[in-house]
Length: 116
Image 1 (cartoon, helix red, strand yellow):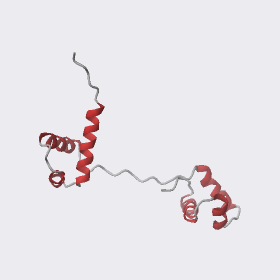
Image 2 (cartoon, helix red, strand yellow):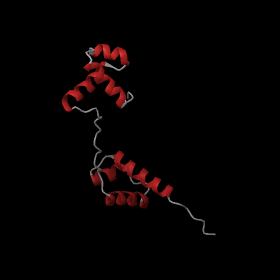
Image 3 (cartoon, helix red, strand yellow):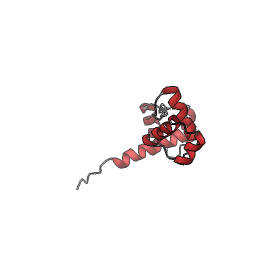
Image 4 (cartoon, helix red, strand yellow):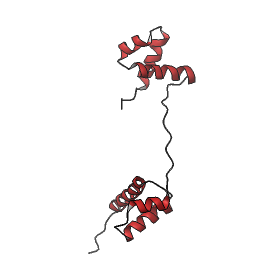
C-alpha cells in the first residue's frame, strides 16, 4: 500500500493545478502518481475538501454473548472443530479463531497474583 499523502502534499497538488499546471507536470514536480493526483483533484472539485475518506468499521458478526458461548464451548471441549462453531453461529471459521485468540489475549492480560 502506498503511503498516504500529507495535508500539505494535497494542498500543493491543488495549488499547482490552480496555477495552471497540467496533471502530468504536477506528477513530475511532486513525484506523486497520476492516479493519486487525479483522485485528489476529483475530490477537491466534487466536495471542496482535502480530507481523506476513511472506511467505516464493519459491525461485529457476533455479540458478546456469542463470543462467551464460543469460548465456553471450546474451553469445555478443546477438540471442538471451528467448523462446528462457525456453522452454529453462521459465521466464518476465521471469525471463530479470532474470537478464541481475543479471549486468550484477555486471559494473558489479567494480572496474576501470587497467593503465597
